[in-house]
Each structure stands twice: as C-alpha cells, then as structure tokens.
Image 1 (cartoon, rainbow, N blue to C red):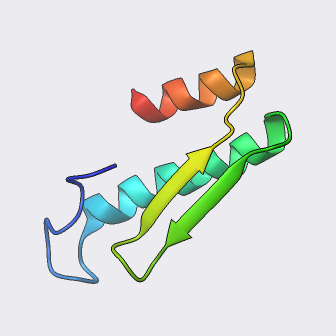
Image 2 (cartoon, rainbow, N blue to C red; image 1 turned 135 degrees about the horizontal axis):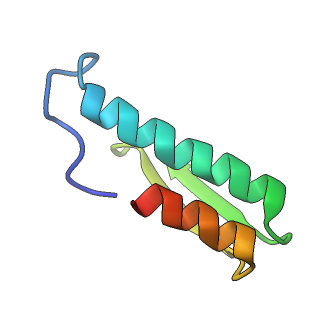
Length: 70
C-alpha cells in the first residue's frame, strides 16, 4: 500500500490510520483461516512497511483479499 500516508500531520492522519487498520486486520484474519506458511514482515521504523507472502489460494483467503481491495 502506498500513497495513503501524509494527508495530515503525524498523529492526525486518519486516512493512514484507516488503511493501516484494514491491512493489519486482514493479515490477522488470513493467519486464522489460511493455510500454514503465511509470512509477515513489518518495519515500523521505515514508514510502516508491511509485506505478506505465502497467502493461500483457498476461497477464504482470496475473499479476505478481495474485501481489502474493494
């Protein structure tokens, strides 16, 4: 996800907060419903980078991703 930060001063950026909540919630649910092997890498020091690999092609995982992107 890019382009969602810096719409307001640090601590007041509700766009960034909303996007972050959606991304983190989706990852949390993917860990619950998807197959084992999900790998999450985050870096709060460098702008809150979040990378997720090993996402399953199963119905539930793909549905969660679809909801995130809509």
